[in-house]
Length: 471
Image 1 (tube, helix red, strand yellow):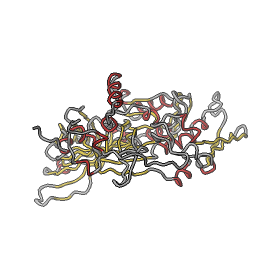
Image 2: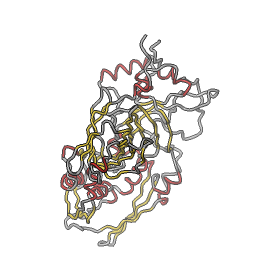
Image 3: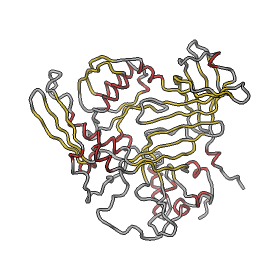
Image 4: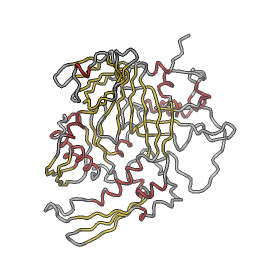
């Protein structure tokens, strides 16, 4: 009989190389000194950040010496997955605490992508003309000194002109992102500039949300096979999910490699709705007044969440409010904006700002993108990235004495976007703290009161299938 697969085995990893290079060119290996490595990917941060805890028995700060100009190179992988190599800039040393033997000192080195430091040291005072994605690419190459093959951009819609007034490159890119409109779907205005362990990306949240989940079938034949299993009563939802939360009573019924890799630990539903905040910030509805200072003309524009929901790309098909019982989307005076315009500010361009096409939509879409948020911990995977779509299975947390339609929560199960990952590597294991977000629901909210508790509750073993493979 084969040995049972354990959670610890699912968190295996390999740090193949880790070293620091001082400002004078000295290379110092840390393979025997590092204690823990944390790397943070975040859709809403432009660059990667991280921390390295080391136990220093060579007084590297004195003998390096370290002075805040060092670079850290790290190579790690999950067995059977892609290898990651990345160079960072060490910008801070934390408090140093001697160990009991007084021959070793523990401290934390904080690091960040080199492009962030370059941005801090650079200011742009320049006129740009063209589509925003082209301008972002030019700033990335000319001012962040980035390689063009390390930037992945999507196409923007309008030809525009801008003068950047002594802003840092990252500040300029973020400002441009706030005004960009998607060429494929002009309703998508939720642009982001962020970095993964592989590359920088300038894309819309909507484009990321339109991706297939990483657990989706790789071929047409696999899709047919899954359909056949489902047709004959197979419990495929959990089987084909990227991650799942197993209730405590079901966790010890059997362990296998697939289940351990997808099992969510320390699961927290961080945010589901805040109606007061959403009204005040304009997610449901808003009003824009524009005034052209040349023509002395003003115009009113409004945003209605329920009417505009189907126009932009979302993770699921149903809005966060009941379509037929919505008292939130029609009241646009809950959030008011004023914008001053200037006709022909760049001579031949009558309307360079095009504020009506992005201001209210972006404001709402960026909030929709984080409307539902989960945090959980899973075994590490060196190929997992922010910006991927994953499929989650989440229980309904009903009392066993209460009947329910299904073991899973029909409003929380389904597709989510990974918005942040903390890759945490210690000497013992490699795990990830993941935050996922969602802007929509897989099932529509009822327009009126309807009975929900019909039928019997499935156990997670029935739902996911027997890990031991018994029929």
